[in-house]
Image (cartoon, rainbow, N blue to C red; front, top):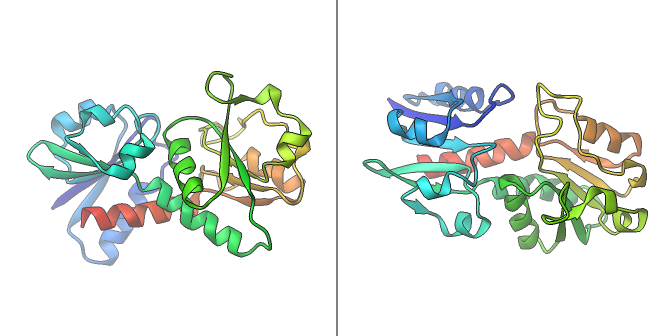
Length: 239
């Protein structure tokens, strides 16, 4: 039986095991997918997995543990999908950017305009994948962070700056189950009905971040389609 899984901390928000095990059962695939709420070093030392996903906070720290890294994942600087390529040898890929691209493209296809610039909230592995996807789609972006050394600080954002960035993407874990009352300290009063708020979080389906956008009639998208599409891309690598 093939063995797959997801590595991250915490994982109580994750739908990945349910999604993959449902896929395996529906197609008669002899495989199992488990959650590993441990460090990649620990899991790689005993689990003998055929492939696995990587989520917060290990998408960047796993890089030096891998035998190979796909060129795209290397450029992004983060890995969310890993495939065994030999005895104790693993290759890293990034399918987050694919999932985000598909979901955002579907959203933009329903609108009469395309945003020229985006704000990416956060600077971690998911943010790096989103930035890569935006570049491929011809959308400029700027990072927003609590630290001025890593991006535009939240406190510096004004109405003009927000009006020039019609796409705002939350790549932080703020608002993720079970801490559903948390949210990025963005100046939501500057959001308009022409804004698109995209949250990479999918559990809960409506975060505080998205609720604030909905109050101002912005287009709001959660991360569920991104999750599904990146999982499909991961399965294509593993099979």
